[in-house]
Length: 342
Image 1 (cartoon, rainbow, N blue to C red):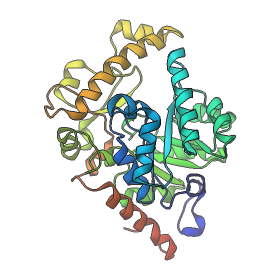
Image 2: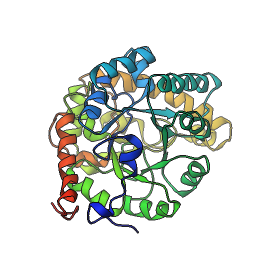
Image 3: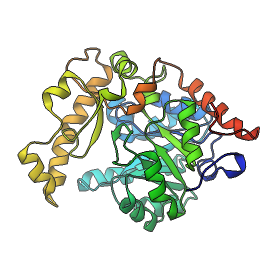
Image 4: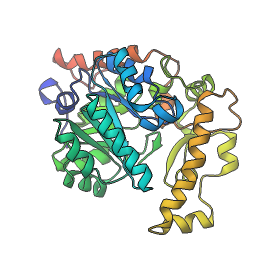
């Protein structure tokens, strides 16, 4: 396994591909990726990633108008997340339109999830852009590589939302032979954890949970306080939200709902075609409930997605300050110091 002990050892491809100063992505989050958060992260020298359903359905923007609003807040690079699973023809057509609009508006960095990214790669590469693909294990990484992606977002078992089965070290070992830059997603909330991921050989990190508990994020105070109060053991995995494992904070609602799909749900999720219907039914319910949980202050009746990094988050801070602190940790490399040093 490649390790990083100084600046000369560091894999800088993410910095080059994303045209950013700090190798840090604010992961696309439904419903928490509001324009102000995306812009603040990018303006500070990292990269905010636009989640199109969050931008349009939750925050109420026409997609192009939303991108232009973000551009009014920062002229630094921003990215876009394309969820490319073909759950329906109409959804796929809408995602194609969003990708084309993003390219027209100057977005050149894309993160793809839940499908074959070939069509996104072809469109983005035609404009000189880059595509990184979310993966949880080798077989999905192999498909992304074969589709021509430029890098991989390695989602480990500490992540919030959809997560993998392997820890960060094991996932890096499984994927490092592919020759693509790897971004660590899951379990990162502090500069020390950031430094540890780079020391493993990752070219950067993607954070979500840490950026929810920020002043720029428009999540409800109840959601933010739930993250601050949560310990690692309060984060549980459920398949009752989207049909695949999702990491959430344990709440009375989650305890009532349970974390396993019922007999009918399990049967439908095993079918080649019925699994898409079942996931759509789950998604319709979860989209509404997550949108509601974004603003409501009563934490007895809903759920919130979060990763185990919540255990290291103890206060609401500015996203800009967080990025600067992570950049400071990186600057130790410029001074010839050990990146793993506290």
